[in-house]
Length: 353
Length: 184
Image (cartoon, rainbow over all chains, first blue to last red; front, side):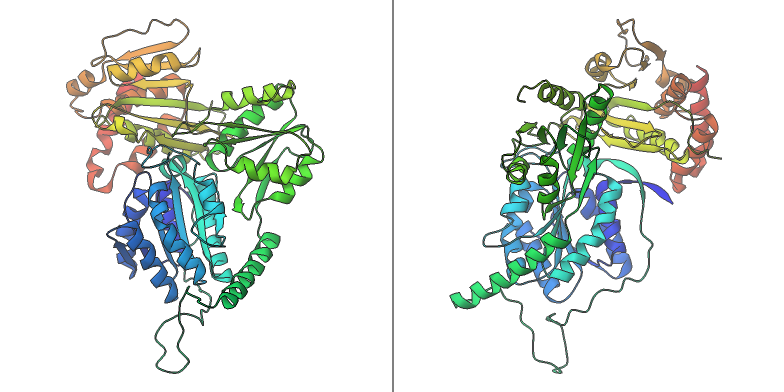
């Protein structure tokens, strides 16, 4: 059955249905409805909702719950995520799974409260200090956000690492029809490493990210990067619309990809062979899909709600084969399909956007 | 009660007014009607500082196809319930579009001649008919008549579904308000 739900609330309900019973957070626009929904929902099903005294406290509570083996999440928006980065690094360094949701708003600083994609670099390059990656998902609809939640939790568990859903104010605030997964018992994976009670029947487990011996730390980081390499092989998600026969390919993710889809459609109606390549996972990034497209297209256009961040990864994937143009709006402005169409036309005419 | 894959036109609407006039609820009702018809819908509210005392607005789309951009910048239908919204949005309406104006609050007239304008004194009508507080629903009735985004039957089903259970006694009055606007 399709119901009409706000993105923020749908993310929360999807988490509950994926077996999440622990939420720690701190309010911030445009994410607040997610926490508010959890505040109502979790106590009714023996879950824990806790509004911490700060984002830093909340992410460390997530670390604690994850160490104890709970399926746990937090959510925030850009400035709040910056505060959480220390904890995210500790969670990654302790090999613990957790889900973090970033409903992005304009930055830097307190910035604004309107939709933005200016945290791409943070999410994919430096979600905390140290050699690390986290899984980063960028759904483009309320339904895809719902479908992503369980997958994000499951992959986080499988690889023992944090996962992030990188949404934005538009996806969080909008309502769309959505089909939710059934509400049933979720069988969570065994977590033999969890620091929970065991009645003295096994050696104690320790969650730790401190390794004083350099050789030991290098070994551990290398072991983690071997896992990352496996993820890059197995878990890239990308949607390609009309890329096969395209002369010009627009690369965009999340809400911006929807705007671009309208522009690509309009370009096709005008006889321009345009296509859309939409990364659904930002880390791992669909490098190969872009490299393959680069073999037959004339140019790429990357569109973001930022001054240009993902475009770096697109250029690395294209590796100089063809030009990669960029168009962005920032500060909370959402590009219009008309603006993007104009950029596509400009490139099709041989000019550089 | 509902039909799949209607041949109804797409709707890309902006609804705007003061916070408290029921703008967001009106948008939700329109989106819900599209949902009951089995169509694709989206509802996107403004959530900026303008909500504090100034204008509240939302974008609503209904289509048989996937909705690309839920943010409507060039609406084919506009409902305005206060002067600032009138000034902000009237020029954004696509040529050939529909404008529904709350004329008991807005005294200005649309000077464009490439849009169809309906002046509905909804607040006054609501008071005359004992429907105080339902000016938004009256205007939605007019929008329904002007654009045909759903059937009146679907709209009645929608009202029955989205009026909260605690306020179920208000369902007949809401339906009356839709009809009043529809026939105005």
